[in-house]
Amino acid sequence: AKDYGKNNYQFYSSSNAEKGARKMELEMALQKAIANNELELYYQPQINNTTGNIYGVEALLRWKHPAYGYLSPDEFIPIAEETNLMLSIGEWVLTHAFMQKKKWDLAGKKDIKLAINISARQFQYSDFFPFLQKEVKRLQINTAKIELEITESIMQNIEKATIELNSIKRLGFQISIDDFGKGYSSLSYLRSLPIDTIKIDKSFIDDISHPKHKGSLAKVIIDMGHNMNFIVIAEGVETKEQVDFLQKHECEIVQGYYYSKPLTSDELEKLYL
Ligand code: C2E
Ligand code: CA
Ligand code: CA
Ligand code: CA
Image (cartoon, rainbow, N blue to C red):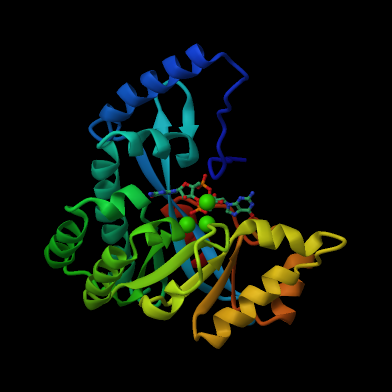
């Protein structure tokens, strides 16, 4: 079976010089990836844990490297972030995710929510918001069912983040906090920022199966999220035990290999839409 949902290329332990050479090689190849049509978006379903219906999808970027095959964004996004490549890659992702959403809307699948990852660097570019604005207008997309996933790392500059997020909300987008609980930022930002959703980091989901912890932090995050009227999504859900725990504690949306790996748009349409 195809398994492009997961990284299929690994670093083998190598010297710093070899790692540096590989990084430079990837950086050079990445500069041509857009023009050579090597980027692709996969979509991982998010499932309503009560009804079993699809709630939304998260767009996940893949790079089909001419020699190495599919690379995980965990390997090339950090490289892109060190250069200004992240700006063009981020714009490519936004445009292509918007076009896909528009296609689904026109096919009558308007309810499906689409989540798009925004890296910290991308969020900080001065061109980020103007580009969003321009694309929303140009493509005439309905932003209400599009959610931008940011991480707590942008809270380092809370004043700027507040202004930026309020502008994004005015365009109609929803905001979610990815990898929630993994950053060590203070929680006070939750009161002042326009947040719709929190995604519980996978490490807390893994802890559900831990003999001592038994998901105690996952439960705390779910309860807190509900008290603050956020939608709470559990990610990296792999086992029945985790699904049952999340159901018991009323975590409404789950995402993970238990239900589905990231899929191509064709596979997603066939299986879910
Ligand atoms: P993330 O946003 O936390 O995405 C979740 C990652 O966990 C994805 O890895 C997904 O394939 C994987 N995953 C999903 N379910 C499971 C599960 O049950 N078990 C396990 N072990 N893993 C699961 P992926 O696609 O390799 O992406 C890695 C990271 O790269 C993402 O983490 C996100 O931070 C970043 N990324 C992906 N696409 C984009 C993008 O378009 N733009 C930006 N800026 N970052 C992206
Ligand atoms: Ca994400
Ligand atoms: Ca995440
Ligand atoms: Ca992550």
